[in-house]
Amino acid sequence: MFKAIVIEKQDDAQRVTIQSLDESRLPEGDVTVRVECSTLNYKDALAITGKGPVVRQFPMVPGIDLAGTVEASSADEFKPGDSVLLNGWGVGETHWGGLAEKARLRSDWLIPLPSAFTASQAMAIGTAGYTAMLAVMALERQGLEPDHGEVLVTGASGGVGSYAIALLARLGYRVIAATGRPEEEAYLKGLGAQAILDRSELAEPGRPLGKERWAGAIDSVGSHTLANVLAGTRYGGCVAACGLAQGMDLPATVAPFILRGVTLAGIDSVMRPRADRLEAWRRLGELLAPAQLDTITRTIGLDEAIDTAEALLAGRVRGRVVVSMA
Picture (cartoon, rainbow, N blue to C red):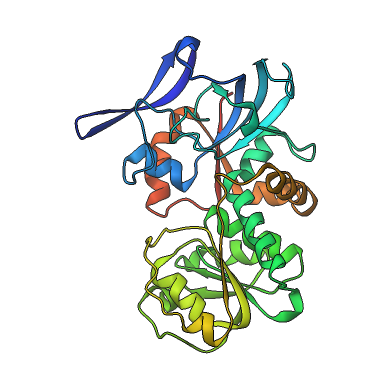
C-alpha cells in the first residue's frame, strides 16, 4: 500500500483526497519508483483545485515532478537502487504523477538524478528551475550576452521567476524583477535582482511599441504583461515566454517583431527532448548553490499539499514548495 493524493470527478464535481492505494492500481510502465520528494507547481495547484483544465482523465494522481529511487525495472537503462528524476511528459495530467509515495512510469521519461543534487534539492528546483534554465538557454541561443543590457523577469517572486533571477545574475546579467509584492524586494535582491519594477506597469493594455528598456526578458505571466514586455524590448532582443498566470491571450501587435526584430521564444518543458533536459540539468548543477535552494524553498508533507495549492493560486506562496514523502 502507498499514500497518494487522488483527484476524482463525478458529474461536474471534483473531489480531492489523500488515499491509501494498493500497488496493483499503479498505471502501466516499465519502471516503478519509490518517490522521495515531489513539488507543488502552478499546474499542480490548478489540477488539485480544479481551477484549470489540467487533468485529462480521472481518477488522477497529480504531480508533474518527482525524484526517487527505482524499486523495479524491466528497462535496460535503469536498475533497482538507481536515483532518478522526472519532469513533465504529461505525468499528473494523463498519467499518475509524483504526489504519491510510489509511481510507475515509462523509462524514456526518466533521467538519472544529477550528481550535484539530492532528491530534495532536485525537487527544490523542479519544473520551475528547469523551465527557467531552458528560458535562459533560449535567450543565449538568440545571442543575448550580459553586456547587451538589462533582462526583465516577470512573475519574479514565483518559482520560475525566482530561479530565472538567480541563474541570470550568476551569469552576469543585470536583472529587473517585476512583481506585485513589494514586500519581497529584499528576497528578490538577495537572489540577484538589481532593480524592482511594479507589475502594474505591465499588467494593463499598453501601446504597440514603448520605450526600448530591456535587451531580453523571461515572462511567466502572459496576456497584457507579455504584450507590454515585447513592446519594451530593445532592437534585436529576445523574450522567452513560459507561463500564463495572467492569461493565455496575447493582445499584442506585430510591431515589435517587424520594426525592432524582436524574437518571441516559446518555452515548453513538458515534452522537451532528452538531450535538452540533460543539458539543462547539467547547467543547473554548475550554476546553483545549495544555499540558494534553501532561500527559495520550503518543505511540506503530503498532507499539507491540498491546502497549499489554494495558497499558491492566491499568490501567497513565495518561491518553491517541496513535498516530502518521508
